Image 1 (cartoon, helix red, strand yellow):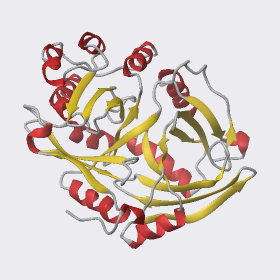
Image 2 (tube, rainbow, N blue to C red):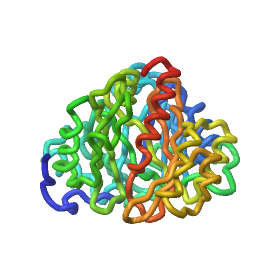
Image 3 (cartoon, rainbow, N blue to C red):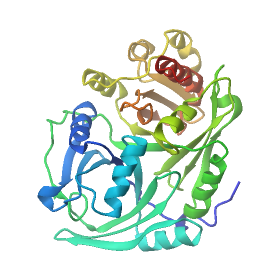
Length: 374
């Protein structure tokens, strides 16, 4: 495995800036995430603001920022890229934007260490200040836009107008940050992309799950997690493994049309309240058999949430040497069985729910079988 080229200071990051989606109808997507995920619209760009080609809605919940963009009329390379992206992949994430203290230095370091540059550093300016942006390519058609907003105090980026909520925000937000973003890549490519993050960004390897770690009777996958030194940005990378039947990664790659972002984990302080509210708003979560909870207390121990409540809401729990976590996964949030979300509440543990992998993937396999894709 490729080792990092230097220290984490070679590519300092401040955190995730935005998860940017290309969608067929940004107005409707923004409404869904406002009502079902409790997010608040803060900015908009479209024909009314001078953006003739695309319409974009910026939604936030705490430090988590989602941007939904759809094409009004493709007239440039970027507009055609977005239109083609939706045609090929359906609604999906095309940009995992990372906030950095110096976009020019970050871009130079990345390209100097082998990254493919997509957009050289450039400035956008309005009455709120100046933002410096650049972009590099990663797996599939996914990119990382490098964002330096240290001299900017506007609602999102120049060209965007402040906008109020689409629906009345909940009294208590459902989540406050992006915990991690998971990418699916082709068989045999995981180590290549792990090496990419090691070399290009100086990310280090945080966790590794191989072999029986993530396997059921029918399917398996392998996963490695890379993260910056501060652990503010964490990217698990999955590839399929040989099994008796089609794995969830195989299904994703088939329906997404190649590598891409599989799911976004959202950090919550109260997973019970969040899941109740999201279910009431129509969000569908994966089911877990009651048998999972029969022995849960024996190995997880005491948690903030009683086992009976975990059983009621089908929330999973896991414990490691640092503490425990609670987590639950949605079903895919679009017609294609591709992108989904995770809600995660951490109490010391910096893991990813290793003890739940078998139960989780059996639940996913049940959904695959219902779709006829197992």
